[in-house]
Length: 489
Ligand SMILES: [Ca+2]
Ligand SMILES: [Ca+2]
Ligand SMILES: [Ca+2]
Ligand SMILES: [Ca+2]
Image (cartoon, rainbow, N blue to C red):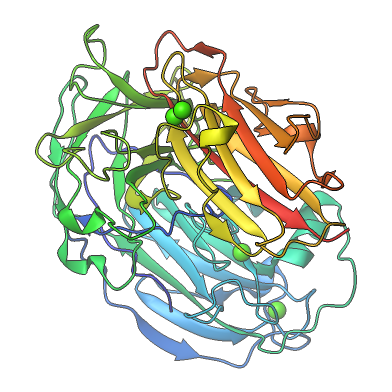
């Protein structure tokens, strides 16, 4: 089983949900607790059947096994090319969750287990149309699937497949070789996602969604789902509970992690993608005096998320960031919502940044050591106008082999910062650039040399130099994140 999918909230006018894939964040352990709103998940009872492979009798839609809402079903994918179909009858319009649990709790990306992908189809006049799909949850905390969507009454088909087979079936990308599952079993379940009716939201209103810190630990990540139809811009007020404030000796800062699930029939089933998604210190989304703490265009890439660190004096985690005063999440649609089934799912969590920079660090000679160990290093920082940041790494004392490659990546815009043209340069001890500067664009992070480059010969020291170009006119955030990885040749 896995993390608790707690919560819920708000149902507004009744429209419904979404999905996608986000890379796992290094340095951000995840975190959070969840919602003041306790979702009463209908209790799930289980049944087990022998399944999978030849002879399990559910390899085609016409052979689908019934899966009742509120029930779980244990089965097997004996071979990588086995698929299992389930028929689900929905009696009431609402938000539904389909989960597959195959990965072990303590190692949710383990090889040898099924990497499930679930696909939900509508059945109309004997034609099955793909309605929604999920490979891994948003944010990506496991390879197990979690499909959340809004459904109207009717009959649906749910297909469970392994990711490798799914790629071959759906993307024409053949499985590279025989996949053998050391453990081919899984449990699939369907349940209604109910809420206590706390709720949202008329346009321009800013309800306070308070988070219940109690279920936060031991898992540092507990998601919150907000469900609402939207027209225009929706706003949510958020307060970060004390347990989200991660204080460690590494100097990390707490940060908001905000994502809306991708729409479409490869996602939540919603007919409208989220557009601009931003955090500010004002409830009114058009208040010209607001400070915008972070903003992304979620329609550009599936799973684009905000990762907004606490601001404050350097090296001081926390501050009053969203604790004494709420911060506001604003969500706007990417397109008009005529027709279709427009809805969205918003997930908010606490996370922590990589260890934070210490100023002054404006020259190579004042550069602090880049935090990290072994082959992996990461740091977070800020670049207000006129600032530049340097970090140093002693390759010899860190034991990094001289024939290795280094990949330096920095992200600002990609996490919602207003820094434009974030630039990263690798410099050796004599001040010479190791590779050409990398500059972040809307299409991707800044990478020195454009990708992994050989380490400089004969320089025991490597410096990372981070600078900025301009500031977005509608985004005041100046944070960035860099990580360095060393790779064998
Ligand atoms: Ca089967
Ligand atoms: Ca998966
Ligand atoms: Ca700085
Ligand atoms: Ca600096």
